[in-house]
Amino acid sequence: MVAGVIGVCVELWSAGVLVEHTADELSERLVGYGLPKAAQAVIRDLVRTRRVYRNYRVVYRIDWDEVSPRVNLHVTVAYKVVNNGLGPERYRPRLIEERTGRS
Image (cartoon, rainbow, N blue to C red; front, top):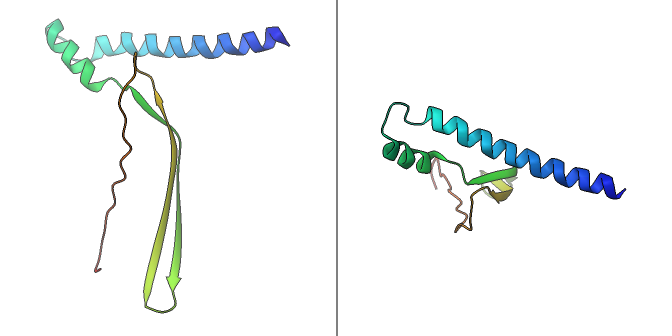
């Protein structure tokens, strides 16, 4: 049982290290190919993903309002944010709403 727990931990850790190493190597070859190293470093810092949204789920519910001839749309958003960066990073969630039609 102990060996199983250790095996799972090592598996999860090694998969994360492998993905991070592969992403770094690939980005070095693809980002700014042919540009000077300083320019490649700036571009790499801009495009490297530090935060990943996991278990992103959106639920829509449509209700008909009996009193007025309107349709109400209820949206529920749930997700977990994981920091894949090398250190702590500030994060503030934002919800952007879009309004269409007449109010």
